[in-house]
Length: 213
Image (cartoon, rainbow, N blue to C red; front, side, top):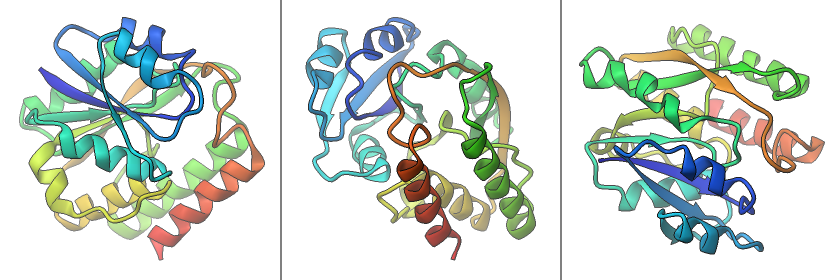
């Protein structure tokens, strides 16, 4: 079984679809990050391991999930219905083949799934990674996979939206082989807490800017 860590904040509506599409060889770990809806109960009813992380922040939820995972390879993905867990095999294949140490899913977005302001911000971050580290990514994608022990060894400190970027920066500094494969990206279920609002986007950009500094 391969553990899939799914940070979740008020995703009760999306969870049945996400977990219903999870292939049998993956084990879902849903990290409830302070939801006020039935996220935890719905996830448990659909067979996920559910843990609670009261410290708000995407990175806090990811770190909590990583702490309880026990598979050699672990995956991360959003729990909002925008990503298809059936594409996880494509992301982990280079890892299991020994060709990569960290794999990210580069989003091939449906029309309207990825707001322009968020897409542009993402391209700027990818360009900055190429300039600073020589990492040829096109997307700081939310679907990703790596070996658990190696990830823990990176010592990622950010507990907000800078967590995914810090992972890549630390991995590059450690000499990891980093790659990406295309994955489909659909309109999320419900309103985004990040890219769907100007405040959420500004907060995410600010957190990532701190990591870059």
